[in-house]
Amino acid sequence: MKQPFPFSAIVGQDDMKTAMILTAVDPGIGGVLVFGDRGTGKSTAVRALAALLPPIEVVRGCPINAATSAECPDWSELETNQTEERPTPVIDLPLGVTEDRVVGALDIERALTRGEKAFEPGLLARANRGYLYIDEVNLLEDHIVDLLLDVAQSGENVVEREGLSIRHAARFVLVGSGNPEEGELRPQLLDRFGLSVEVRSPQDVAERIEVIRRRDAYERKPEAFVKRYAKEDAKVRAAIVDARGRIGAVAAGNAILGDCAELCLALGSDGLRGELTLLRAARALAAYEGAKRVTRKHLRRIAPLALSHRLRRDPLDEAGSSTRVNRTVETVLA
Image (cartoon, rainbow, N blue to C red; front, side, top):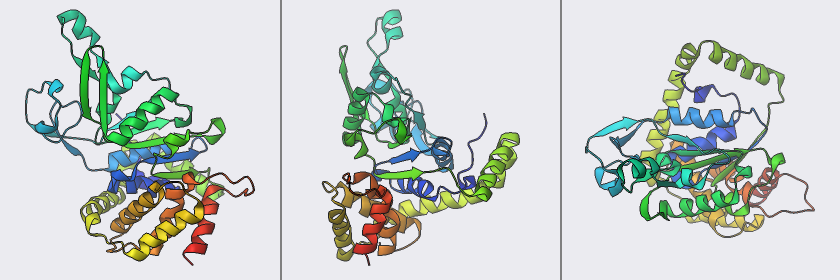
């Protein structure tokens, strides 16, 4: 099986890579929405980051990737308490997927052959402690969107059907990608993404040539190409691991809290999720960069990612959402 494209070999797309890294440092940020042109490395970045991350410790045979036997659900019927390392899971949620496939359902084969009522886990179980990736997320069916909203809020998958009463942990980083020309995302789901990124095809000829060169080298000799960027990927991995251990000690003073509130008020962001996400992402960035305190530099860097998808539409302002956020940042944090 061919190894994923190296994360550090992705050309450009700095905002997308930053957003991915921050959700790896702090999964509680709430996931990443990547909207833009096809063929700009959206799915490549997700799989590259997951391959970059250190493996997770799980109980052998546990269907929800639990770290301890106490966290494994009763229905899992474990035969051992031994643990093993697994790569960070990246689970694709395809368009047209059924609800049973997502949440899990009665194991029909076991019911017919043995007469036993057993649970067959779904995609949410496999994605626990990892990433759930949805390509063309704006085309997802409404009832699946509603289901994901419930699970994303509670961190738990609940199945009550066909005589089954099942609960299990379902905490994952939700990553969605799509093309805005093919349809808009429901506001309820849009608000659940912590960060959003707009990606565009590179307009610089030299940059496009470099993208082609690297992809061609990877396709022809994948093992050699991956080895070439192994040292850079290792640096990113080490920085993420260090940031995870450091983030709890990163301070954010009252002045920074005030800046978060003023930015969101000036932008007309509904609710308080904007402030909370902005602060959390800025703290993750500070930890990743080795800083002890959140500063305005971190807020300026993160504000477009954390707030651009939370703006109300202004028919009198033709500027894009990221431009509006940057404009407001320059005014409020002058």
